[in-house]
Length: 255
Ligand code: GLP
Image 1 (cartoon, rainbow, N blue to C red):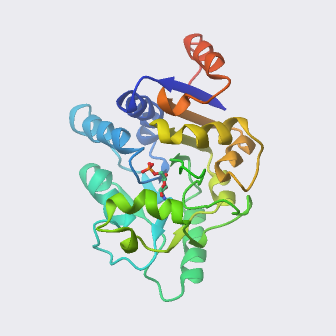
Image 2 (image 1 turned 90 degrees about the horizontal axis):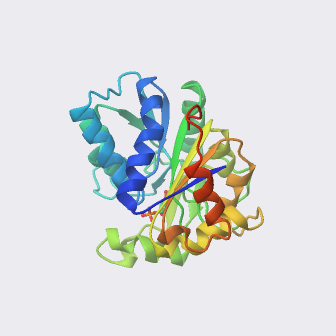
């Protein structure tokens, strides 16, 4: 696991774009998270598309998760968010699990099959919840779970209420790639910024691997890049080591 600490969210976004750019140019399958954390990354990818000829031809996108029951054109459906924040601007085709399907379990199975048929996800962008969730895999999620419906915790609904008119408008149910699904992506790129993420980041990176902190499952993956800003890294015991490692990153080493 490579942990890189940057000064602020914009620097995290720029570094994340550096990590993703070779994959984009290679026409990769990219897993996309929503939420505030990847915002600066998507800003920079749109800029590189416009100013630096970064083409997404040949790439495909797959969403990490989706709310259940929101209309397809609801501004907070994750399909709509990713269209607005990235896909429409760069011409990227993105699929997501169908949160409006009559049979949600079957929709999740179809989604797993679609990811497989695309050859699997090359790089998966991830955020982390304040309760340690990854995607919408809340604490107690099986570390081997596949894409499936889940029920949000009150904490996650409160965290996400800022995107809705009220907390009651935040859907109770969601569809999410499972932790086992996420672990199958070839490269995981976790972005976390701000002081509210510091306890979850420390638990995920330095605590035990446990369903109580779903993001701790990252410790089991052979290729993980974690990009943090200073406030999100504030509770890490090994922050100095990560700074030392970054300062001595060999020129031959990619991401
Ligand atoms: C949300 C999303 C996750 C996201 C996480 C952090 O609920 N389902 O995919 O990574 O929680 O969100 P944010 O980046 O807005 O803090």
